[in-house]
Length: 407
Ligand code: PLP
Image (cartoon, rainbow, N blue to C red):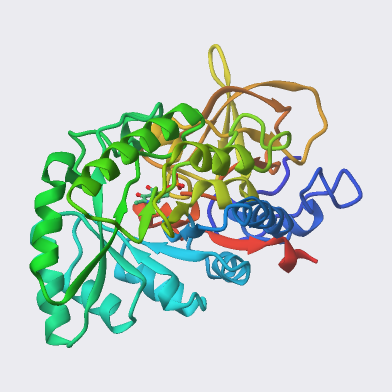
């Protein structure tokens, strides 16, 4: 008799717990009452991660950390991050609204974006955000004009493209000369001259972001060296900025979410402290996304069918690329666990129900033997997971639940 399992969203399943209600860190007895697929956030881990960030950042009195809202804008997650005292890094008007709704002080908000619409700039001006990270002189003129109309002075930093390749996936490197982001280094001084002539912008900082999922500190050292060169150049023209924003990019260990649940923030902040040559009173701002929320989230999905192919087995699950697009978009690896089963592992291709052949979460990954109705946890999905979900194929968006809601 097969276990009941919904072939669609909307109906809950009923399977018997094989443990005392917990499977590792997962409250599986609670999960059995929730429609799948859904995101599960371990808020104890999130809080520990935030404590680790704060503990290391405060050792450097001029370091200021913002959370990159784009990684996960779930309101419950944003609230916890805001409570910890981090600022917000936003890339759209919608993110500014989400950050303000979650209670982030508007003077802790930085706003970057390669194409900011007028209403988004106006929102930033109305809210008196900390800084606009500006990507071209034409944008500077627009901000100046909109600020003039509101009789305000906008604080601006220039996003400089440092022409540094991070050792990460081509689709998430952003600091190369051929990327669309930022002002070329050779155009920096001209942009600063323009800013200094405008009455309604105040040039206060330099901004950089070289890419994401960076685990080689050498990439950040290369960025520090480039910033040092640029600062020396500016000094020759008697230009000194209030702050340097180095962006985000610190990676997480997707292979070992249990062994390395919290990234090495000590090494990360020490790298900047050691290699960045700061001027008196200068602050360093960080915009961390993935490293804050990546490991605390899992996508919980249910096995609908196990298919025996000619040479391999498929676990067909009810989550698809619409719920977590990273594997389809970047061939990203996520560790997957069968949290319903203690049977011996065997290899499966884990695939979703979407009408796209790229709707594959993993190929030949070892899972405890799967049966219809088993729950799988797709790990390290807290960043760029729920927020990137879509309704392609007219699917429902996944809900995000916190561990606190499971008690
Ligand atoms: N800052 C900027 C400008 C970004 O574009 C991004 C991500 O793309 C981030 C910060 C956050 O990056 P991460 O999640 O890798 O820390």
